[in-house]
Image (cartoon, rainbow, N blue to C red; front, side, top):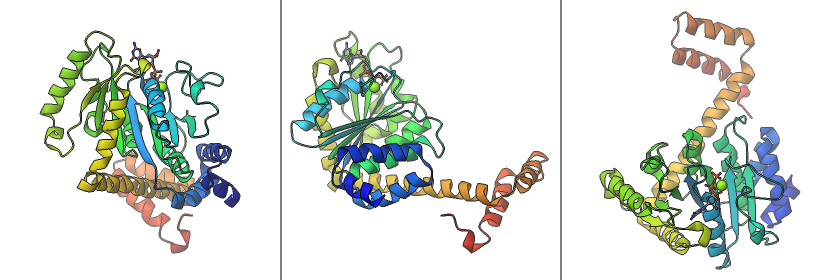
Length: 319
Ligand SMILES: Nc1nc2c(ncn2[C@@H]2O[C@H](COP(=O)(O)OP(=O)(O)OP(=O)(O)O)[C@@H](O)[C@H]2O)c(=O)[nH]1
Ligand SMILES: [Mg+2]
């Protein structure tokens, strides 16, 4: 384990791939590894890329990798539950050829198809990002399809979040659906080669003007790209960098703290549930369920009893 950690920290890409596999499988080995890796992270800039299936997230990431690599930075990509099928050696889905980056050990690409995993998708992603961070990658893109609470939680792990929208997706307020409108820092209207791109830009700007975001210290810009040709991608990267540059002005400090809080709360909740599960007999569990069913106890009151019993013995603290 220590050897693996040393190799990851020593920027050995194959060791990193192994570490991520262990983290993905979860359980005690994953936990032990994440604990060892954690002190070595903290340097990476995590950039979230979210948007509807097929909006061009991977194509955009592919172009961004080129922009970032040209400055000599090392890049990681974590694609969470991509909707496009993966095939053979294709790394970001079969629609995007990442062959360009094959053999470039300054680029590490990984997909996580782990929905429904024990312990949750967001914590698993958090630990994967920790591993990439510990391996000294300077920039990490995390690609998620913008639906559901898991994805919103994953986006909380990012210092900057880019929301990718497309014209004629049938709904100008696609963004509003999963609450990503509130957390996106940069809006990208991709497939600008299609008609109606300008109309969508105007619609997003109008909706932003009405949101509390308009009064914040970072007013999210709305940019246009044609990711397949790399058009506008340089501007996206510049905008991400200016967003990060605001760090000194307090915004990122607050967001960073919120991110840490989220991870800590999530860890507390997870450990508490696990410890109750480990220390409660099936009979005790059934009795609690029956009391809730008969309205004899409110679920929260039953939970309090279970927690009190589980933690009554100090020695029973969860590992
Ligand atoms: N016309 C046009 N097509 C694009 C553009 N960007 C991406 N595409 C195409 O859109 C399709 C989907 O692109 P992806 O990058 O795989 O989209 P994605 O958002 O990563 O998709 P999922 O990971 O499956 O959610 C591909 O066929 C791309 O070639 C663009 O700017 N213009
Ligand atoms: Mg994709």
